Length: 154
Image 1 (cartoon, rainbow, N blue to C red):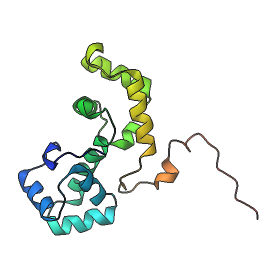
Image 2: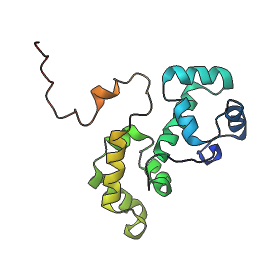
Image 3: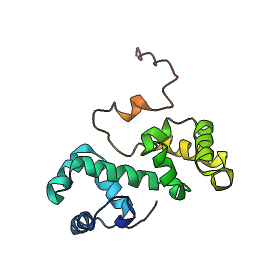
Image 4: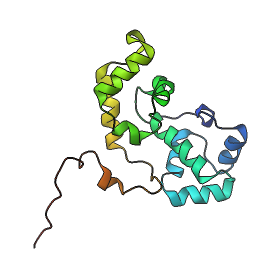
């Protein structure tokens, strides 16, 4: 797990860091676990004054830090619209790799195998409960191409 200080998160203020630390949250992986569920974000918001929407955005950043080898490419991925695990898990690895190469050049880009790894890792992680989303099991990329299983008659 990535253990980054809160200041590593893009756009987080010193005041937000102070409020989160007052609640015992010192690292990104602690914040990720504290904002996983919508109800938890509401509770933390009430205690810190940080909006649930802002906590969700910070949680999305924390979740991206959990994918090994992706950290240095996060600014590029954000520019390409990959701001959380949900868009990453839906990405076609070959197309995403081509877009990264186009953005940074071949010498600065990760390998196709690395991008494939990122997408596969994102597909195994269902860390954040998104507002107004279907349950993770229904949206799972592993289930998208399968016909529904018949009900057991026994």
